[in-house]
Amino acid sequence: MGYSRKKLDLTGQRYGQLTVLAPAENIGTRTAWLCRCDCGKETVIRTNRLRSGHTTSCGCQGPGVGLTALTYIDGTCVEMLRAKTVRKNNTSGVTGVEWWAAKQRWRASICFKGKRHYLGSYVRFEDAVQARKRGEERFHDEFLREFAGAAPKGQTQVDSI
Image 1 (cartoon, helix red, strand yellow):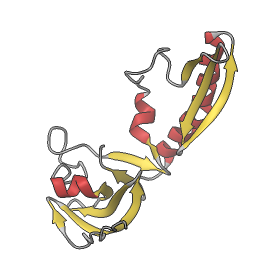
Image 2 (cartoon, rainbow, N blue to C red):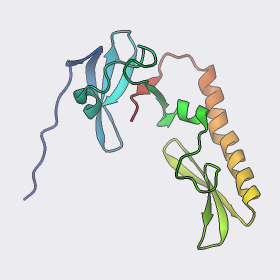
Image 3 (spheres, rainbow, N blue to C red):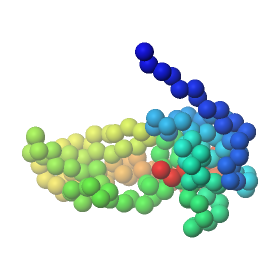
Image 4 (cartoon, rainbow, N blue to C red):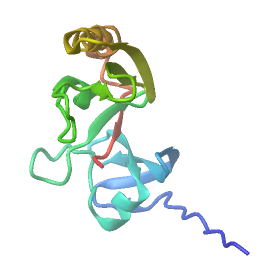
């Protein structure tokens, strides 16, 4: 016989400069809450970040004070797209390009709005890199241009993981 956890209701509670307004869509498997910071900005934060004290504001306090908030739109982190960093566990040196040993080819893909898009497999590494670059232009760059042109109001921010 299994057990079920009673879901916490944090509505109305304060954590630092944040007031919990309502439950929000889960972040992965973690429960999250819509909060309003004392500065007026609304942000979505995971329960464990609130209760542990790791997140106490929307990030408005500037660098070095609390954790910096990340801006998510339709499940896509704007700051991560802008940074274009290569992860430490990347073996090809190019994000979204990997060696597909079973086929002896290079495979290119891109993640956007929570979905992985397959961009093809290639004999030459350079061709896979070009496919990835075209994917970035099509998905990421267009999205960032639209975001830059959008008014800041209506953004949702999610705390750092």
